[in-house]
Length: 286
Length: 178
Image (tube, rainbow over all chains, first blue to last red; front, side, top):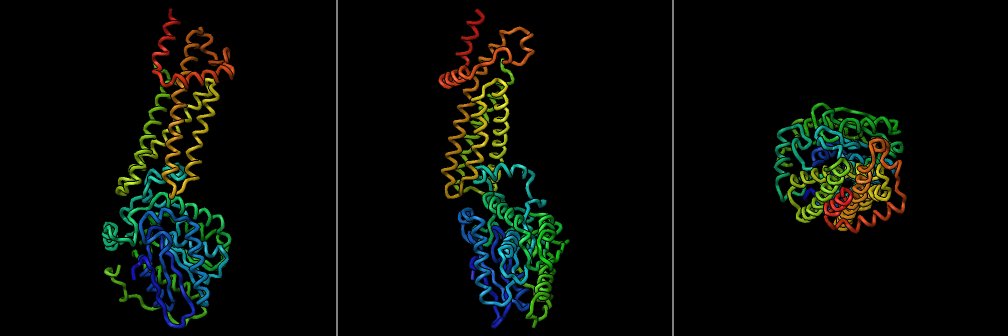
């Protein structure tokens, strides 16, 4: 199965599942390791490709944030019919999708927001970002693409090299080598919608964010933590990763904390958190 | 001799022309799907020129209002808003159409800026006839143009803008000197 089709990791008669959302211009591929950790912890895991992704850049440029939101809600509703407990986790824009499902009043068992991207204020955002409003609100948005460049959201240099070679591979459709401005416009509109409705989030959640996130600063995670109405909420800062925390240096810690949080909420804890040491997914799998 | 007003107008015309050429060329790039790095750099260039265009429009609006050229001021104010209206209405599917609309708007603003030179030149010539005392006072406080006069000059300047300015104005200067 190619990553653009997404993946499902299932056990028979499982009553709990986790729905994963990848980030903007990413693919289910980036969530695969995290998914395997969750699966080993006794969760069925579903991750599919978001609308506009997995194909050519043109189809991504045509996609509106409402399409992503509707897709996320439909996916959740589908899983909710099959499982007693459905958790959601998302990376980057995926975290916004997870929050939007919660804002729509769905019965989400628990939510994990990983590198939540509400503001584009990370340290790799170009110096000319003060031009953004001008580009966003004019036709210039069609002309500008952010090229994906070092460090590719990764502090781990080995993984970075691997990802770099993927970006340079023309046949690769797992991730785009740029973020079109028109998609940034949609992301910012979506983020505005999430911020406006953040009080509607009442489900238990955990936000995990790196202090050194290159794309979005810790401000985004703090905003969610401080403004959401949930009674059960956790906030974790990472020291040794950049934006892609699910494949960077802290990936084990992120997965452990997510599983620990979901297990706290789950009524079907017949499985313990497995030892992840020695079971690491090889880079060749990337 | 070029004064500040003329300098702003010439600058406005130049920036407008660069932006028109830039957007037209950008449309070509958009079709050809060039490399991301090139796209990014070109995008930054266009945004920079566009920001200068906005600044020049603001300066021109100020110039227009200080010379009591309200019609020009209002028309240019409109062109300050139009790019944002077009931008917010546009979608990727109809990008080509909206880019064409923007180019058209840029052409119109170019003609308006160009035609503004005429009335300003006339006012400057009127000013040169005044004594030092009147110069120290606001330009048109003693001799403010009526709306009909402004409108007729606007129409005249639109008609004459295709002709070289210098010839028209040099003739006027010569007659006054004589």
